[in-house]
Image 1 (cartoon, rainbow, N blue to C red):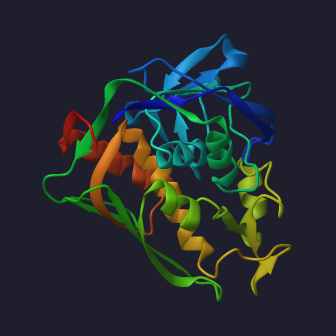
Image 2: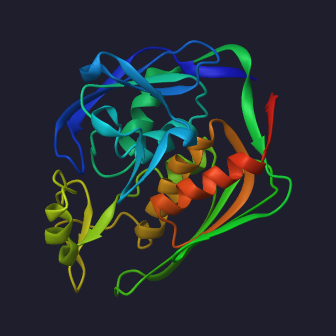
Image 3: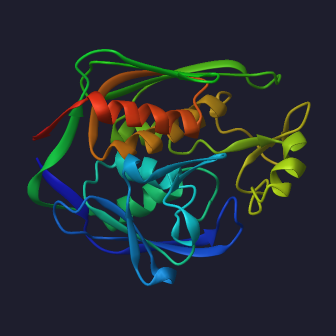
Length: 280
């Protein structure tokens, strides 16, 4: 199969999760071989490739670049892009952070599907695991083994009656992502709100774009799945793993994944995987 981009431009708007700023995001066709790139239209069109070498370890989000030209909280957008198997794409934004929408990757996935796709010349970048790769970062543990396509096994543990220990195994295909992961929303706890906002985070968060939990249950919404929490963590992993810069063939087991941990894991994967330009 050839490389894939979108057939036409499509746009969404809203506010960013952490900065709370209004933003318009546009998905635009890109030239064959150019990869996935974010463009800051409010910064003279400066671009940052969506690759792990540009990732910065940041709190509660995945960040590309530093300073005023950085792009924050890219994981939901990249999860939708990766799920559709898009190779070349420009993601234009007029602020530093994509809109949070409903807190999931679903609106981005749907917008890309509505834009349609166009095949173009060139072969897809494929990254293949040939032996086990493991890292530990604090409470986060990761292992990757050889596999065909991308399979994720994710485990989380939270001392809350609605969460506890949750585990899910997902084959990351377009259909599987749409059915099992795309609609899973970000979540947080009432007890954390004051401290996070004091650090300049979650300024755009509300019960309309996040699953918020108090000591007893969910506040102001209804869960889409009883295990929506682990599904969301798996969806975040799909977005962060996309920073390798192509299709990843691996079986990955992530325990207590974090954005910081997954970025470190992708750095290690990028160091050891066998990259090939292949039709798959």
